[in-house]
Amino acid sequence: MRHLIYIFGDQLSQNLSSLEGFDPQKDCILMAEVLTEATYVKHHKQKIALIFSAMRHFAQSLREKNYSVIYKKLDEKTHLNDFTAVLNDVIQTHQPEKVILTEPSEYRVLEEVKLWQKNSTPIDIRQDHRFLATKAQFNQWANGRKQLRMEYFYRDMRRQYNILMSGDKPIGDQWNFDQENRQPPKAGLDIPQPFSVKPDAITHEVLELVENKFSDHFGSLDQFHMATTRQGALDALDFFIKHNLALFGTYQDAMLMDEPWLYHSHISFYLNCGLLEPLECIQAAEKAYHNDNAPINAVEGFIRQILGWREYIRGIYWHMMPDYTNLNFLNAKNPLPEFYWNAETDMRCLQQSVKQTIDHAYAHHIQRLMVLGNFALLVGIDPKYVNEWFLIVYADAYEWVELPNVSGMALFADGGVLGSKPYAASGAYINKMSNYCKHCVYKVSDKTGPTACPFNYLYWDFLDRNKEVLAKNPRMRLIYQAYHRMSDEKKETIKSSAKSFLNIIFHK
Ligand SMILES: Cc1cc2nc3c(=O)[nH]c(=O)nc-3n(C[C@H](O)[C@H](O)[C@H](O)COP(=O)(O)OP(=O)(O)OC[C@H]3O[C@@H](n4cnc5c(N)ncnc54)[C@H](O)[C@@H]3O)c2cc1C
Ligand code: SF4
Image 1: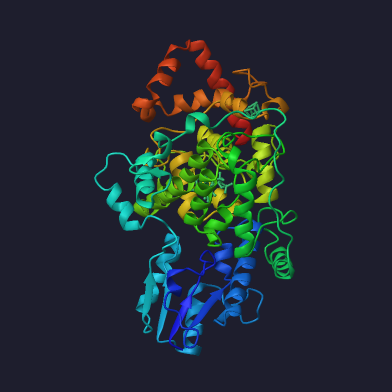
Image 2: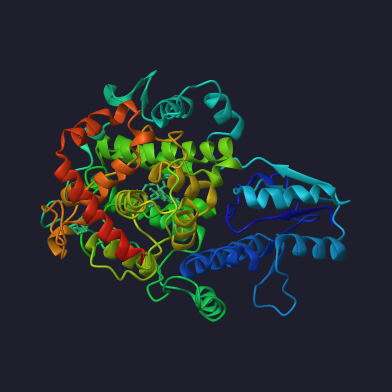
């Protein structure tokens, strides 16, 4: 054997850099379902099912091109537990001249891979061209800047890839159309049923394997309906462009009872495992704009998520690792309340967000940020527990994207590297953007006391607890001025409501 190409479960793309120069006569691909990857945290069952089924389908598509593939299934008797053991075994049997791979997306795996450089078989680790900004490019952009704000990075990416540009100006003379986006949900919205794929024989086999081997993992497989092939993922993208894109921006932040999907794209599962590539999603949306199938506010808003946020988040991850994992700027120490696992809470917004996470391994951005993340921020849950939870529960969760979103965006654990101030909000925000409060036992209009929405007093209690570090933040000045204007009596009532509530959820 000449080259052995090792492809990981989140690299399921035939355009992968490690496949450049592949010679079907001389080279071979290695793929393995390894236990350590499925269990280093107890991932949602649907995430494991998606990856293993997509891997099996991907291997099949390579074989259909007459590529030779060594594929190690998890349920084989000779199964080995981790990437290194599998590689060593295959090297011993097949004696390749060289091992080639595309750099892993996560720090943990890269550290493992670096150790292979000590092996006698040479190893070629190639850049991952699926991302649109290289790590070096991001570092160059970031170094020497006082603040790493996504908006400026995004504008550079728009220029670099010539997306929604008219010469050197943004189309519509604005970079960002968010003032037209983010509307509260209207009554009677016609929300399409989500795109779904019926499991085929391969997926059925995997679902059975996951149910047997990972029965103690989070989540349910009952409603698994994800695409597990390249064609399926392209169909999912097409479905979004046709049915949801036009209203994507308008209702991007809206939340509705028993409506997990709304007008979002639901493509992060596919983008993050390689079944879709970012540039093709961006170009599909841009084309919809030029064909008058979607307005600029929706298209720009969607493109910003992928060309801006996704690339920026990945850049921050590699710029800040490995220290990023341990940051805890607000010194939050509390454990994760039990209802994050079972949805058993009277707070309707949290109950809905956790319930759909159990059922679908999915929640949209505002549920993650302004409900689940906001609550964890306000009650001071230790970032290590919050990160672990977010890494476990979502089918799109990989550390490179989960960690900056949780520690940086949701918890302000990085002290302002990613966001200029904490995304902390009271019940008023959730009430404005959803109909959850109408179905809640708590009253969003009450500020303190046993019937009041807990977000209301927890918000002020959070500001009070963290005033030493947050009051200095210029973007927090107005809100602290409002707090200082409150009477001592009111502040005491807030504190006592927060204390009673925290004592209950943390069993003190
Ligand atoms: C606390 C928290 C944790 C998160 N964890 C993850 C995670 O583990 N994996 C993940 O892919 N996203 C994560 N996100 C970002 C975002 O919530 C998801 O990408 C999005 O909800 C996926 O659903 P969608 O495909 O329907 O996205 P849409 O709303 O349709 O957006 C389109 C695409 O834009 C990209 N995108 C949007 N926002 C972000 C963002 N902040 N960071 C990176 N990409 C973004 C995604 O690829 C997404 O598919 C997290 C956000 C928060 C606040
Ligand atoms: S009243 Fe408060 S706890 Fe209840 S749904 Fe609204 S924001 Fe959530």
